Structure formats: C-alpha cells, structure tokens
Length: 109
Ligand SMILES: [Zn+2]
Ligand SMILES: [Zn+2]
Image 1 (cartoon, rainbow, N blue to C red):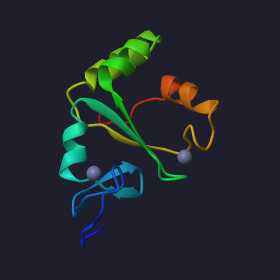
Image 2 (cartoon, rainbow, N blue to C red):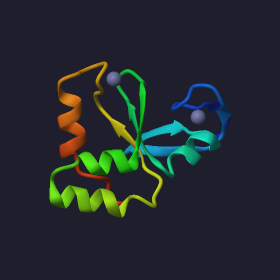
Image 3 (cartoon, rainbow, N blue to C red):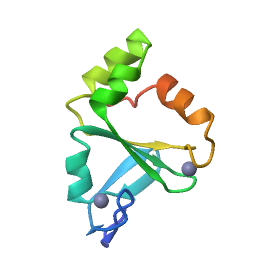
C-alpha cells in the first residue's frame, strides 16, 4: 500500500494520498479532481506508457455496438471507473479501439 502522497497518475498535476487499484496489483494515485471527472467519464490509464484517456461515458456507450457490452457499460454509468489498460493509442494505435470495444469490464461492474 502507498501511504505517502504522490502525483496523480491521471492529470499529473495534483498531489494526493488517494489511490485506486486499476488492475490487479497495479495501484495508482488519483486526485479528487480526477475522481470527480470519473463520475461522467470513463478513465483509462495505460500502464505501459502512463498516458491517461478520459472519455465521456455517453459517447463511449453510444459507440459500443455489442449489445451485452453496451448493457454492461450502462450499468457502470453511475459508477467511478478508472481502469488500467496494457496498451494505448500511443503504444498501439490500431489495437486500442478494438480493445476498448471488446474489453470486458472489471468484476465490480
Ligand atoms: Zn488528477
Ligand atoms: Zn501507452
């Protein structure tokens, strides 16, 4: 566990002692401002290069074509989702959209 305050991994501006587990064993700092953003946005953090992606939930949900996945995303609408991804558009531009569209959401959803 991290106890000392650290730089927010999402915006890289604020210092905070709050942290979340974005995938098993990967804990990152998230400031209150970014937690607030997570109410209306899905936040993905690339664990390879450290880049963060913030996308409006409505937009993401409207783009999902898979019926079951859409339902899962809609269930997550009221939840705070900050999720780790192991690649992103900077690391792997072709894969990322496919990844987001096909990815299963974490168990908490
Ligand atoms: Zn932040
Ligand atoms: Zn990346």
